[in-house]
Length: 390
Image 1 (cartoon, rainbow, N blue to C red):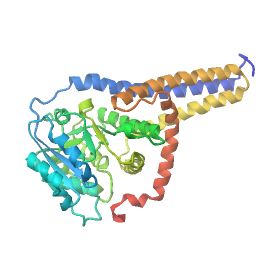
Image 2: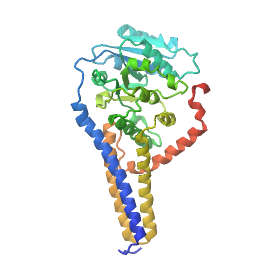
Image 3: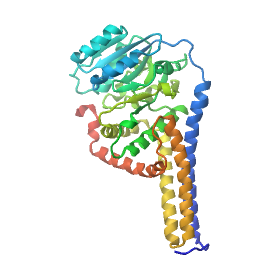
Image 4: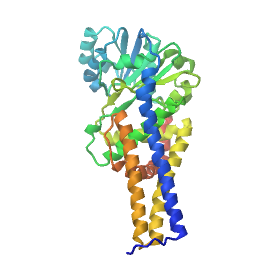
């Protein structure tokens, strides 16, 4: 290996391409972090909120998580809120009349329990539970959640509902799984994927183009549900209640995002790796029906990040064994890593996720390959996304 400042034009071009492509990606991540931080520090602080909190119906889908209800419901029923009801949709009549729920019902008169009959095999159980709960709701505003969630503050409901000024129709809350419970291999990739997906749809909504929410923490005016015939336009799908449906009702409706810590919800899964894989496959399938500009931008930036790596490696190879080129490439990579690491750390903090530090840039290279594998698997079992195959 030798040191020489005589570098070929090809090598210089490759170094420049690697720097520019990587810098574009790094600055994009910084802009996303800055926009999210500005939303927290400025937008949420400056916008108008209601003086009198409106009555609300909380719809709890418990069709697959009834066993979690004794731990979940007291946290919801103990909310500091003037007027609300909780409608629990259990899986069977027996579960709806269980001793645990009956005891809670005696203590809290605003708790109502119903069940979703099992004889509906050609319907999504999730959508069926939500439909039953919304039809049973007394109030004009409904907030959907699930029995495997945990609210982290007694101000959760008030923080979400403060956004319903007369012109607001939809409020998008945020939810995330319990990161500290994930001890299995691949947990860093799951964190990075969750944060990357979350910041993508949140910023799209902040910019006025909502296309997705999370049913664990989603509020809207009930008339929107009936005006759009509920889930009629996606009834053939097992999924889509948090993206296909939301993108439909958000057309022409005023949507707000709520990201204050009190408003965020934690989701519990017995098998986090399996749950993440299942959710990723489901949402990748339904995302085809809600394509937005953010998808194209995300894909383009991933290409630039890979182009940066390949160009820098090619520069080193083309000039090998010139140590000057190697050092220049290493300096560029370290600088880009530092910027991307800082940006992702800021985003992770806002979304209450662990900071991934210097693994974040590496995972940004790895994630497109993981996504490609998921899409390949999905293409082999695409029929399983339709209710007619239950």
